[in-house]
Image (cartoon, rainbow, N blue to C red; front, side, top):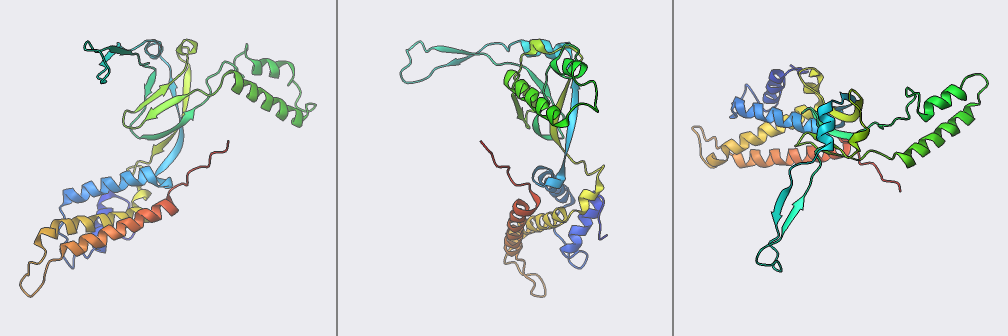
Length: 275
């Protein structure tokens, strides 16, 4: 099928590109399944169409607050420097445990929306009082004055509150919030700005992406060459000679070209830092 929309159709498409059924492709089905997983993983991690930007909300529980305000058990580390005394010194470290466990399909976190008591819904907050006392008439209020005032409020919030520092590691699936957990309340929501990998089961159009089809075909070709390398130089009846090394080298060159094209065409460029 020219437009695959499932794993099976994608596999058959790539095998036909390599010559099936005219010639036998010496690659096991399990190997092909592994290569499909590798291709989808690379597509999710490096191609801008492989992810979607989402905002996930999380409701804070009392256990989160207690854990965030607590400390891990102190760990000990022996100083083995040359200058250490025979009874080596013992160094103590404390590590905060204020983190949230994020789902596996989250591959990147941009940040956390500001956690502040100055939002409009808080009647004791500055924004609420401003809208209550000054912003009572849409028709008579100058929009330029409003914009300047709102920017001034945002500047004050940034100076007084600051951005909430976070640390995220994809392997751990942990989002550390370096905040004062005593100011967080139970049932309060934290909104995470993050990137989620597209699920090919739901978004089957992923199987028809040009990069996915070309990259998988080259991966299977490389695996085919890898399987036949040990038979190089062996002649079959009729004078046919295996040349697994040539298949492997050709596929490696194709993959290198595709990965270079990915960096220039399919991947988002790094943002410049302005300071």
